[in-house]
View 1 (cartoon, one colour):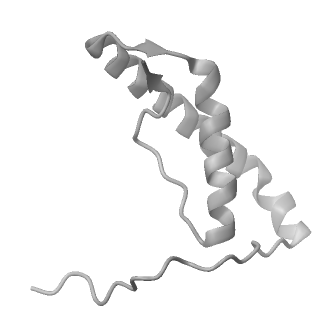
View 2 (view 1 turned 60 degrees about the horizontal axis):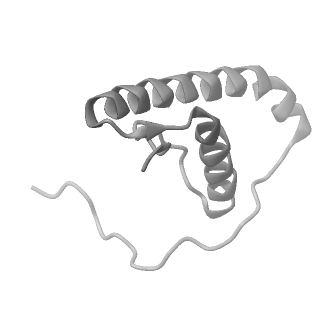
Length: 90
């Protein structure tokens, strides 16, 4: 069964996101709520994994890492993701 068609081997090209200020104004509240919920979910997962593995967790690194990654990804047609604890370290 064919699930996925041809996947291009090249990375997406740089393209600034199209900003229409009337849309930004309408979507800003919802976007903020989604960002906060995503951050809370990631912190909860990071705490759970850090507790099981005994790793050190720095919550103050969580939000800048995720935010900067999502902002950079917006210039390459990325979809914001969640579900991985990226603040668990040594």
